[in-house]
Image (cartoon, rainbow, N blue to C red; front, top):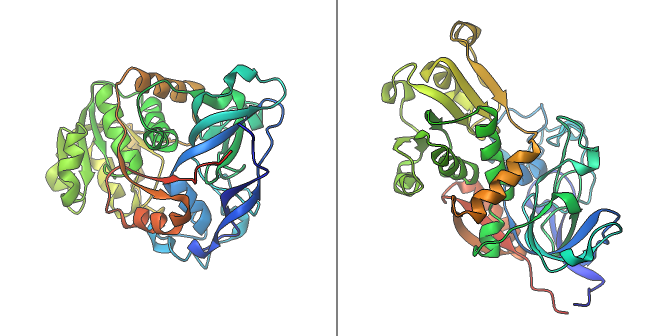
Length: 365
């Protein structure tokens, strides 16, 4: 196909509310550099990290829950530490940590036979930091991402996937499923008793499936109205998110906590963990500041894992799970890219189970 010179994309013009999202039809199509591919994006998932970056929630001056500034941003945020990496964001930026599409161009050193492959991009990119341990860029944060008709990504981190899923379903995978799998990988989850908070969201619903795949007995926490949907994903028990966890569960009855909420609920997680138990987190939608009794930590010999950086095996394992039919996508709804503000507001309402996905306009050759 012949490539256009300009494309439709959403430019983030600064930290703040949804008014910072500028839907444009005159953005130059990027050119792949050496070792890169050009992707015609056909679907792009919405994630907390995209919204948290827009609102500057990552700034240490912000202490509220993520949805408190979802529509308007956080006035007290400090732009100097408002990205997930702590490095000031460069504007304008095309966000979008998730992308599914087809390779339509290659840069120097990339095999042209890749053109035509249906692919997803690893959201935690290591190519641009020379694969140094515990360093990475987020697709759509330190470089442009998937909220556009075209995106550039590293060849070695752009993975072909052979399956019968739709593009929207594949676009639900990169950020949410890799985040969930990474927590389980770090905590070395096996056939154990696992507690998952925020279990109806994109990462939480992925964690339920992925933990069951590992043979775990899963107790999930979500709102009452979503309990049946979370059970359908495989959860063995579901607890109302407003319930008293120490009434619902015995102290020491959980081997691993996979937490995406934090906030005021956090101390109870330490109590329900058994001696020698593991806690893994990759989010704090209920609030980033929590209280810890250090005596509980050391007297119970607990291990706490903060999970951002991902070893290469995490993403390649996900691809194999998809191709073997071991997990299933959970797409709640799709929106045209032009409705990104509406979709993000719906995302923040937490009224859905699974993922919300944006669909860019089709490219006319």
